[in-house]
Amino acid sequence: MLHSNLSINNKGHLCLAGQDVCTLAKSYGTPVFLMDEERIRHNARTYIDAMREFMPEGSKPLLASKSCCFKKLYEIIKEEGMATDLVSPGELYTAKAAGFPLENAYFHGNNKTDSDIEYAIDSGVGYFIVDNREELDAIERIAEKKGITQKILLRLSPGIDPHTQKKISTGKVDSKFGTAIETGQALELCRYTLSLENVSLKGFHCHIGSQIFEYESFADAAEIMLRFIKELRDTLSFTTEVLNLGGGFGVRYTDADPVIDYRENIKGLAGVIDRLCCDLDIKKPAILMEPGRSIVADSGLTVYSVGSVKTITGYKSYVSIDGGMPDNPRYALYESDYTCLIANKADKKPDLVATIAGRCCESGDLIQEDVALVTPERGDYLAVLVTGAYNYSMASNYNRIPRPPVVMLKNGESYVAVKRETYEDLIRNDM
Ligand code: LLP
Image 1 (cartoon, protein in one colour):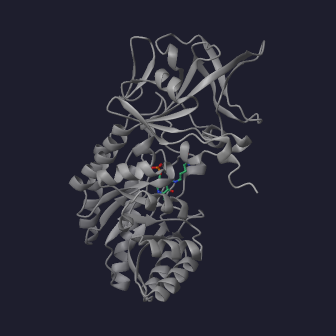
Image 2: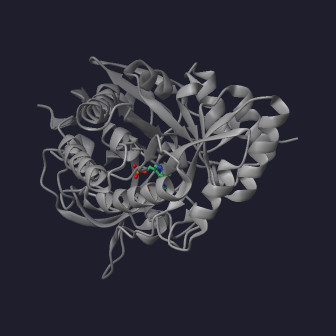
């Protein structure tokens, strides 16, 4: 099937990590996010091992917390020895509550407030990834007040467009993130940073976008960043210790997406970085990467119950499910492709083309349009595959719909990593 942790058993039911998805849906209720713990660990190890093997000393991956964030996940990646990036004090709070070693955390965000900065410094966050001059001044002021020197990377925009979807491409010059190299502003910001006393500049960050299936775009970004690093050495005598190339390696959501070998791509990228450093005659910086979806996406799937099949004569068919944009807003936002199937009829041939509709009072609440399915009946289970990234983390309570639980599968057993929200949870903060 699409990924090696998916299979069909002798009852014709879809299985994840060898476990019957329908049995799990029956015992935990629907909708439910299922996640394969071993797959998360395997993906984390793939990055850790490849970066250690092929890249300069000190190179490592950071889990992009925005892709998925709950306490148990931090415990898992901590056990694997993976570091993390955090984009908000909420993600920081979660990592801290999970006992994650925050010296291994990199604090992102294009608009950190003074209180975010204080909170992160007080929590002992290892590095700030600084977006802009005002933020830099705030960190300098707060670090001075606290009598510390804060390690930082500066986020730069290399001016690369990796041709992914516009809303998920972030490395272009015209972007809300970072400071542009092309305009000369990055050089100015570095000069200024080096004049400050309470921040210690360790290196640079860039992120070019998501769903990138070949390392060449990363190599292009690396080249621009390394040329800039050489310029800094030559003009300011500054030695860069760390180059963070961001996240973005792609994931197969459907059969139309290519198969990607992360290890081979990391090896290829490492080769280019090596050559560039030699040609430019600069000291090799440690490389960081920030994979999100390629760590968690293929570990997960979502199971819903079908409520109705409505065929509008002469038009199309809608299959309605008991979830929708509150647990997966990605189709509504990006028209993201997904593979959908009826989990209790996974061995049957599709005989219907249908649009999968969520339960919100909103016509745009769709999970996928015009997909081939086995005609379902009320009570059947519909599985949406590869939902481990940006589904739970982007879930909302729109229409006051409680968020589904996250159930982890491990060694033939399952456990609840995040409980299903209750109606009581929904009114917890109402006065
Ligand atoms: N680092 C930075 C600075 C990022 O902005 C992102 C994603 C990542 C790492 C991780 O990228 P990944 O490896 O997961 O592709 N919510 C969206 C995409 C926007 C993500 C933006 N940043 C989605 O559902 O696809």
